[in-house]
Image (cartoon, rainbow, N blue to C red; front, top):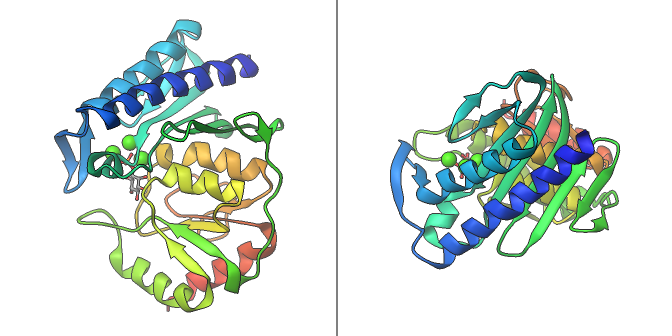
Length: 264
Ligand code: IPD
Ligand code: CA
Ligand code: CA
Ligand code: CA
């Protein structure tokens, strides 16, 4: 059952990704709605989400969904929920910055089971299932190396406009900046977390940006399956709400957590 869910969700991510690729290259980069000061929605956010829901519904007609654009769709098969961020990085998409993703996770009760993060322009699918390992397309991922703090390239999501806590984010940046090799905020939380599992980033954190569950769920499964440690800012690996997040190699996680919490 879970294997079939994983395969169907991967297919759904491919289909939604094809749509985003087409929109990115053509006329799609127009916002028609705003959910906040700069939380834009394009035709492609909506179309990608309905593509995903339709594809998964065709094989699992009773499954529940939590989607950024459509909210909760109840299902009689209440064990599983598919968590969908159809376009993570809408602001990049709108500006023509080629860094955005489709993100799909599956939960069973409180447990995160499956994570898929697809970069349609690079045709890179990062995916993982609990106990099956994590993959980049067909290549199995191994745990990334633990670079010393001074060599770490760290990514984060920063607050913007009315979304988030700028003061905390600035304090954390002030502490971390002189200690690491670089800090990036590329603009697709799902990709940045999954890239940490892959080793492209040595760590990811976010607190101020107030990420939603659909931003982080799939990436968390991928990072965990490559052996990264994933907790909230208090160090809790299974918080009720993922409104803060630190992802890093187990040998670096504590040091990072201490830096980020030393904001006075
Ligand atoms: C956004 C991205 C971004 C993060 C924002 C999110 P969206 O998601 O994940 O990296 O900084 O807080 O809202 O709206 O493009 O799906
Ligand atoms: Ca959005
Ligand atoms: Ca998102
Ligand atoms: Ca989105």
